[in-house]
Amino acid sequence: MNTRIDALSPSAPLRLYRWSTILTKLPLLWSWPRFPYLSLAVFTAPELWLVYQTLVPNASGLGRIKTRFATQVREVWLTIDDGPDPRTTPALLDRLDSHGAKAIFCLIGENVRRHPGLARQIAARGHEIGNHTDTHPLGFFWSSGPRRTAAEIDGCSKAVVEATGKTPRFFRSPAGIKNLFLFGILAERRMAYLGWSGRAREFGHSSPERPLRRLIRAVQPGAILLTHESGGNPRVPMSVIEGLLQHLSREGYRCVLPNSSEML
Ligand SMILES: [Zn+2]
Image: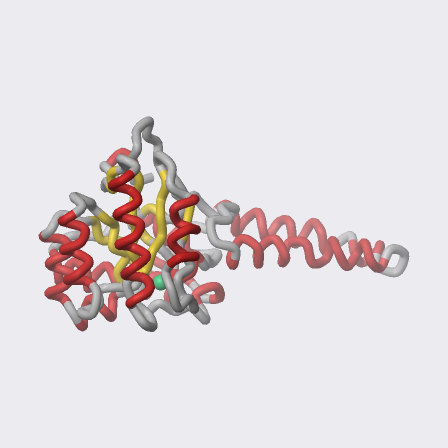
């Protein structure tokens, strides 16, 4: 495992970052005393670029991010993050069935190990399972090195394979945070990075109205919609998903799954 990660070829963005750093910082030895403010701006530009690409969801300077899919008809991908959760997953599977909807469940590895039967049910009822890291490391994923990043991805995939027999094809990072090594590691595993075109942002809301309105505004053919099933009080996220499913049914939209050509 270590040999494989150590042999990881540097990604193009990493090379670009290194060269831009060298090329912008060396001339500053001359320019700083003459143009201090301009020099400071040039000095920090590569770091600001890197911080932007790492922390801003769907910023695609470091690698390819799927934020919508090609279709001419009323279809969307419904993605549901942070499960499985015994408080929500069984009811959610029933609601999806009653609407004839399929979803991409982006599961957390440690939740899968805790509830492997739920992960099995998700797969058995025809939904897609995505990799949402092993421990959902919101605080340090942006600064993780190649070993830690690979461990988060591989730990989750291993848990999903053990529970369902299927290997996740998609990766979604916690809150859309990336790091310099992520895309090279995903490419080695032939996994696609899954972004979104609209999200509910349910957390912190005591009623589903505003998050639901936000999601409904994002509905259009080829949209990738982000919801959650876990974390905090699940009542609001569950109502958001139910409201979204009703809206999609009324408007003649189908929740479909990616085919293999849409993976990358
Ligand atoms: Zn999450």
